[in-house]
Amino acid sequence: MTLLEVQALDAFYGDFQALFGVTVAVAAGETVALIGANGAGKTTFLKCLVGLMDAKRGDISFAGQAIAGQPAERISRLGLSLVPEGRLLFPSLTVEENLLMGGLNQRPGSWTLARVYELFPMLGERRRQKPDQLSGGQQHMVAIGRALMSNPKLLLCDEISLGLAPLVVDQIYESLGRIRAEGASIVLVEQDVKRAAGAADRVYCLLKGRVTLQGPARGISLDQLSRAYFGA
Amino acid sequence: MIWLETIINGVLYGGLYGLLGVGLALIVGVMRVVNLSHGEFIVLSAFLGVSLTGVVPWMHPLALLVPVALIAFMLGFGLQAVLINRVVTRPDPFAAILLTFGVAVVMRNLMVEIYGADPRNLPAGRLAHASAGIAGLHIGVLPLLILGLSVVLFTGLQLILTRTRFGRIVRATADHRDVVRLMGVNPGRVYNVVMGLSLALASIAGMLLAIRSSFTPYSGVERLLVAFEVVVLGGLGTFWGAMLGGITLGVAELVGLKLDPNAGPLYAHLLFLVGVLMRPNGLFRVRT
Figure 1 (cartoon, rainbow over the protein chains, first blue to last red):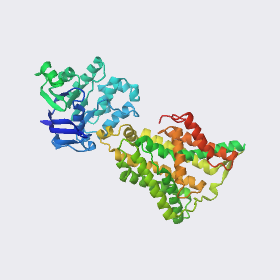
Figure 2 (figure 1 turned 30 degrees about the horizontal axis):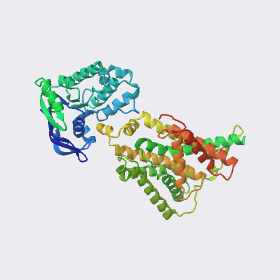
Figure 3 (figure 1 turned 90 degrees about the vertical axis):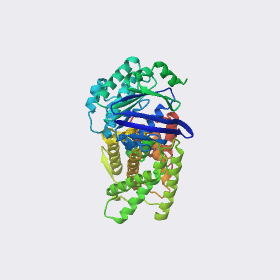
Figure 4 (figure 1 turned 135 degrees about the vertical axis):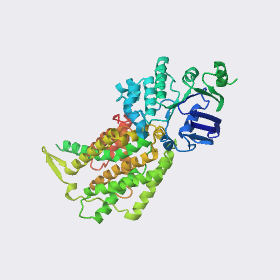
């Protein structure tokens, strides 16, 4: 069953066109990787999905509902959750308050504050600390936990490995495995091609706003990927 | 002894100044908007108090604080929802400044139309001049009440912001207006309530101030100045800092008046100037 269907999406920043006819589909239970260099349009794509940006043309359908152009507040109730690029935690709030904010629009499901602390025990110890007292990896955990608290059907992760030590990234990606096991579908936006392709069922590659490659993660060679990533 | 009394009375009135400023500090902290009509709403609430006194003359002005605050809340909510929310998302602060400046001008002239330009004040009977003998000092009863009320309101505001779900939403919206939308929060609706709160607090200060000093439709600028000084002196966006800033100014004004009865608020403003020159980020950097 197709959970998310994006058809021929065009997006603009003023006069600058950032996305050209992007077509992406995510099936329920799938993990899809969206890779590409800086500026390829990955974050723009995610912003259009969650309603933080207005797509000029194209259709976006989530769980059977047309959501293109809807305000972010309304889309958030449908089960779409974003871990933003750069985490964007609330600096005035404690770890626990950040997580509770994520649970504001809680849909029925298995993710609760207690389960998030189970997934990330380090956060439980630091629940009353402010984000600036946490390490980068821990901040990523808070950002992921915050997105999980609403029990999303589809979790969008924007560069969750950025700026982290490999061991920490291992931990984060391991938690993704458990999130997947609970039934969530995931879109992984990454610059780290191997990580993302390794964790995903299918891969899309974006270059300068266009989809240059798509297919099952196992079936694509590194050579093909690199050509699609950098442009032949 | 006289000096001690003066200083204590200054501290007590300082609570009032703090109250004048905390509403402004709230909206600067939450939505980065400077409401140039804050002073006019302070004066309007005093006029509303006068009108209500005419309607229910048997009620003491202090009892009218609640209905006036409620009216001010609704006015603030409406102002934000209809006007200010249209400019709050723009990156440069000028639109909001110009808009609220315009609102101030309109309000000032409306008040002259409706109430006339004569100086008024809110009669509070013997309360305005009553003083209690405490430990051999003469402390004004009204200033004591004002300080008590200020502390209660400040504490209440802090508790709302730090201990309630709504307060959490306000702080999160102040941090990242776009990210809260991902959690189903409409920032505009949050701002409506915050602006309502801001003006409700200002209205209480306005009524209390009107008991002590007379006012005209043009007094708004003076009140805005005090509110500004309190906010800047305390450190933009902090609350207890605003309270302490208010107290500093209150003491400076009363001590100054004792030294030089014709000075008016000069010494308070001088102190502000010196304070800002020495510590531009505010005298009291108290994290909210």
